[in-house]
Length: 119
Image (cartoon, rainbow, N blue to C red):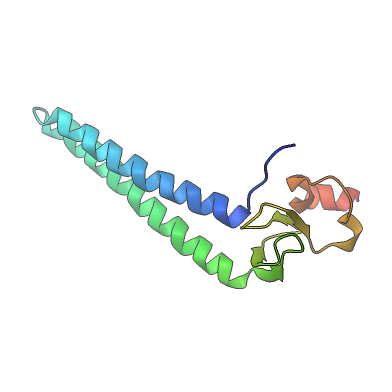
């Protein structure tokens, strides 16, 4: 069985990866100290990655404040849901608010508008 994770956690993880990638890109720029233009390009690319991460963290924070908070039936902890189907933030249990999807195989495609029209 595949392991599913919460959409909010996936986006936060991506933002964290962007921070580390930005730092690594800037560090690589230090190897080009002899050529200031290349070093500056690496520093700016790293800086842009960190700024993008900041924007993503802000965006997911705003999205998280609007998310529906539910109690997971498996671990009984409160978690937030985005869309029709999502996974618990704590135990990765498949969750849905749509009663027509209960008992069906967990599929992230249920969140797309095209898939929901077919059902």
